[in-house]
Image (cartoon, rainbow, N blue to C red; front, side, top):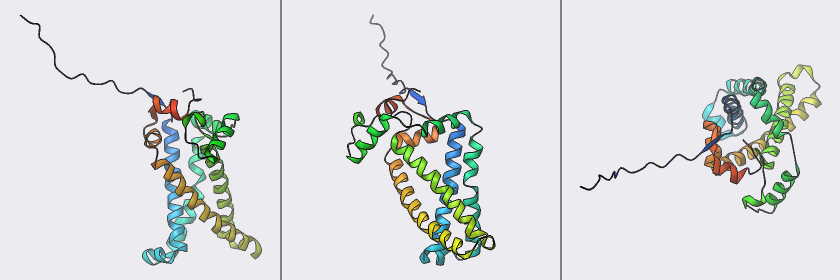
Length: 211
């Protein structure tokens, strides 16, 4: 009598995953993205006639824009309670020789992973984080000058309006690039959504990172 052969298909073991972001970090990113999205959408309604005609109620749009902009720093400040968030802020602010190598490869459009060494955050992510943080502070300062018109001279308000409007346009372009990069990397998006990424992706894209 032949022994019975179990022909049940064997399920493949799930790919190993590593933790990339904590729960607090993911919520900081989500709330900040929501507030930034509101600022961009309301700004479009205030400056582009085609959207202004669709929405109407300019006074309400202005108030939503002002309060969303005023709240932008709040998620980051609240996130400072998290040790993991503070640690990642330190990583974003720490540059090394490998970051210069990454930037040179990016300028040459060299997409080989071996030519773009990166720790937990690559040089592009560090540059974006520094730029958007500075731009947000400038937008907040100029927005306050435009909001409280009675506190500053006319020249200050005129200059603040000029800087605010042109920097807003630049932020829109940079955000579009940021979103485009995210759409091209599903595993990076999964890391922000679930907090973990595949080990294979981490070793390929961030070889100097030691989770």
